[in-house]
Image (tube, rainbow over all chains, first blue to last red; front, side):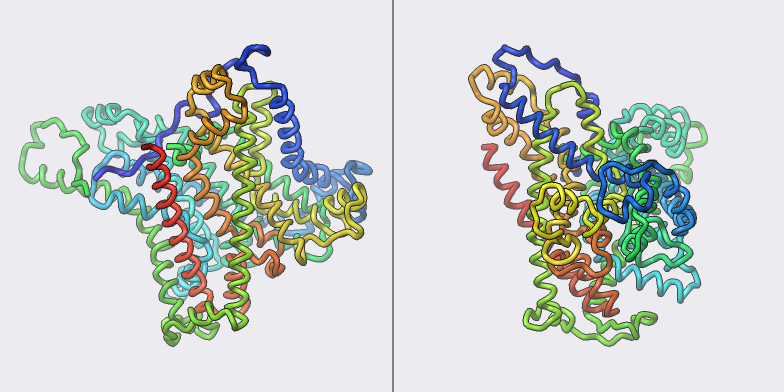
Length: 307
Length: 328
């Protein structure tokens, strides 16, 4: 039986593709004028579609309250940074922020470590049940979250009752949940990266007297840093943006940004300029991280689908 | 199935290693090592995914109302009762589920179709280099990189009746509507949800298709162009057939994600989704946590899972067969 098709990072991702010079204007290879024009129009409209909400978020966060309670205005009547200051007292944003940071940070850290070990096992060893493991783990990724919600809720409540370990309503339970959610994809991505590290390297290390762990830590991990970074960003984004489980499994003290801001935005009297300021503050680190590391992330994200 | 520990190199025999006991522990270590490395991942998968799935199936056969949450083992068995309630399309519960299900199917088909179309079109448009291409690509990824809730909250603000952008543009500036419309309640909510979903989802299709396009050799296009094939013909005869394997996975992934999406409708509408946009995830959530009837909720989840498994199976069968036939 053959081993499952593996994600192998592609060396020439769209990001590093050699940029072939466009053919000269009047050569038969040049795209026709009509194509160039329709491309220009299509891309302009698409850019507008993508950017309008971003513009609304940024501009509204700098507007005085009067601008967001009356009719929508494209241009602010005046610029102010008050929303960025006021939001911290309108909602307990600092508390949400700390909760989200702890939950997403811890989930990311654990997820990366556990995924590195698991991916190393799958990439470097043959063992009984390997295929079952990879297929099972990957397929859970595709199941509806709602399927796990009720049982997990019950499980955590009952573990709490039986052992006194508070998983329900605590950050611990949420960390455990999120880290498992990002695990399948992280393992999958890392297997691909580890496979691309030449096996001779860690075999040489084994011969030189490193244990398997030594070979992993000194040879394989350093060579797969981009993949590990990508996995970390992915795990962080997963935990930072999740709403479903956070809405059920947190209480007032452990509420995360996702639930806190969502709850506030559904009230009747919303200070839209403030919530846009908060949204921007919350988004900037994630978007910046994603765009900075897009090369690695995209390679990992697409490897599985393209291969 | 393959057998154990073949890949690890044999260690050089140092003087002490030749003795029998050392070798045996070494072998046990070698066989056990991969399992040891997998253990944390395995335990977590068991605790958070597999055990809950089994519990979910068990729950769906129980009459699990709020009285039994603390001690769910004590809840009485109800056989297929929960399933009967869920699929009894004449009674309110089943009728609502059926409605929610059909809304979800319609929504998913439209959203996946649009995401794929926009993503593919954009990827094809950006196949050649031109000035500003890198910047545009980064911009296009922003909707995908934004945390779901901040993006959707921004759309909530844009869809507001009195102070939102959408009504301002459609009503005040373009005078398309006689009255400012309500977007987050009533029938319009379906289109609001679709817009947000496509806005968030198409960059993923774009990413995957762009990666897929890199694998098509340039010479193919050049040869086709020299043979007189127009732009459109090149797309139809070269690009789309070459993208087939990529599309097979992409469409399936988009389908599953969109069908199961909870975050977008939940943030857009809050706890009670309007009927026209009552996606099945939110519907089950509401049915479970508003009435605290976990038994029925679980039965609905299991039915949902069975449906998705069936669709995935049929889809893979049909598309793979088509692919094989095309190869011949």
